[in-house]
Image (cartoon, rainbow, N blue to C red):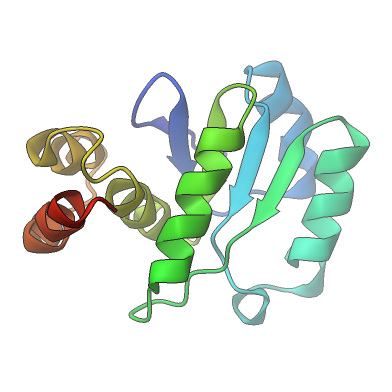
Length: 143
C-alpha cells in the first residue's frame, strides 16, 4: 500500500487489497473511493468484495469507476459528492493513483486555485498540466 496525500483530507493510492483496509482505517481515513472498473481487476478486488471488506470494519466505501481515457462529468460529480459527504479523510485508489488525482482535481475546480489542483498531485508524479483548461472551465461554469 502506497498512500499519497494530496491534502490533509484527500489521498490517492495505487490498487489496494482488502487486507490493507484495517491499516487505512488506522491511518484515520473514513471513506474509501474505488476509481477502478471491475473489468481491470481480479474478482477479489471487484467493488462488491472491496465494499464488503471496507464496510465490515466501519469504513464508508464508494464505487466510482473511471475508465481510462473516458472520464465523464458523472465521475467528476460523484467524486465531489463522495468527498463532500465524507465524515473524515478520504483515500481514493485506482491502478496508479493518477485517475484518482485527475477526478479529484476536476471535482475541486473553483474550490481551490488551478495551480494548487495541478501542483499537489505533481508532488507525487501525477502530471495534470494538460487539464488546466478543463479545470478553469469547470471553475468558471461553477462545477
